[in-house]
Picture 1 (cartoon, rainbow, N blue to C red):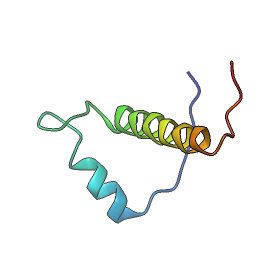
Picture 2 (picture 1 turned 90 degrees about the vertical axis):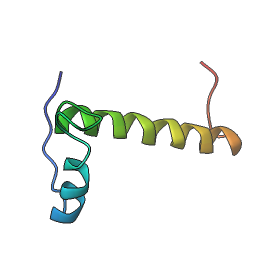
Picture 3 (picture 1 turned 135 degrees about the vertical axis):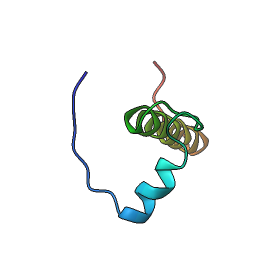
Length: 57
């Protein structure tokens, strides 16, 4: 798995942290960010499909 580095505004990071940990939906920040990226890519694929911009596999 590759490692990347991103800059995130403090307010956004604080919001993310509310969903991480024992009482959160994610075990750690990395899991939360991976899930968010997957969801964003799914949404972008849906938009592209509606506009006829996706190629068939």
